[in-house]
Image (cartoon, rainbow, N blue to C red; front, side, top):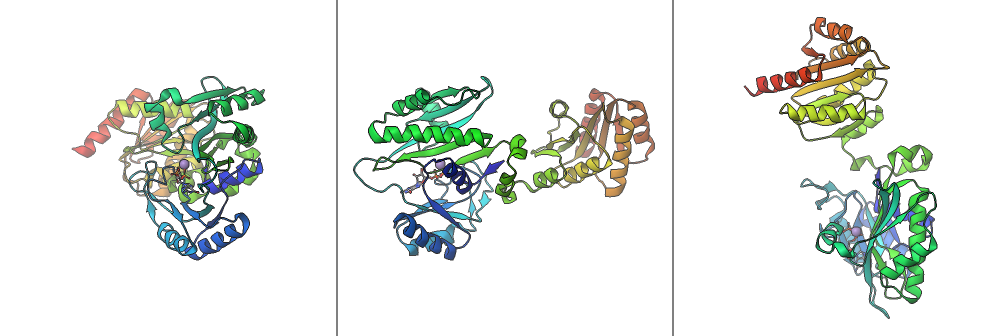
Length: 400
Ligand code: GDP
Ligand code: MN
């Protein structure tokens, strides 16, 4: 689950990570009030208006702007709230901005130069460790830095059982070229950041830029946080951080029915039990000349309700030209699933796209018989190969 910058910063603050302070607003009037409050709390008289969407690259897309007085705060907030913000990460359609963060300006002049760094903490699956990725080349696209200056990207691996050791934090501060008070601040920053990542069971904390201010403070200007969905049950309070505006409506509906659904761009909808089988099914669809319209894992206990919920979600995708149901009857018996398919079909009614059902495992033949005798426009297949052939046939029929 992704969360907004302002929510990520709230988590960071709880762990003692210094952040660029800010207050959220949903309207231009609220933005002015937020700025006044921020002025009272921090003394800042310049502000940054930041669009809150779940995508990076907001600055370049016109979603982060500096305001030098309250009038500008109002004008910029008015312009950003409600805009369809297009960034490198949103796709061409962009994302609608519902909320802005009014933040203090932290690039003020002072005794030394401001300097931007990049730092992220994430899980490295290959080594089974956490890794802190950092570079002096902050502020810009990390992908571009990785390509142009791979030597400037540093990695510090952290054994999750041991945690971040003090010498590692010192090494990071040293490699970033920091000395004196800024060096001390960075050690504190890294340690607190790692703790925040670890305690919240997050999949990623990405801070770009980490800023050294002109008075040698180290703080997080941005925060891109991905919480691990599989650990959310341990953090009940995180449920409130979810913003369904930022999610695909079909994916939201699927998660309400406890279905594991990811929307894709193809034309063959698929409903499968088990993630591995779902991946294999998507491969088979591609091999037969189709493109999967989605990933959908109905889980171990496929029954009439889950099948129906899955059907409804797949059918809402206008690109779907055929549906392949591929269920392995292990714990759940194929005849039950077949009855579920027939029942769901009847309940939904008026399904125009052909459906190919492949049931394998316990009571597979019985399942196939139920499908064949139902009189509905459902084709049964026992072998995965046959199912793929049928997908090919129905797609060809539609193109003819
Ligand atoms: P992103 O573009 O989505 O990554 O959003 P960021 O929060 O990283 O902000 C984008 C850019 O806005 C930063 O890299 C900075 O250059 C700039 N920016 C952010 N905060 C301030 C600020 O307080 N003052 C000034 N002058 N610029 C800022
Ligand atoms: Mn950023």
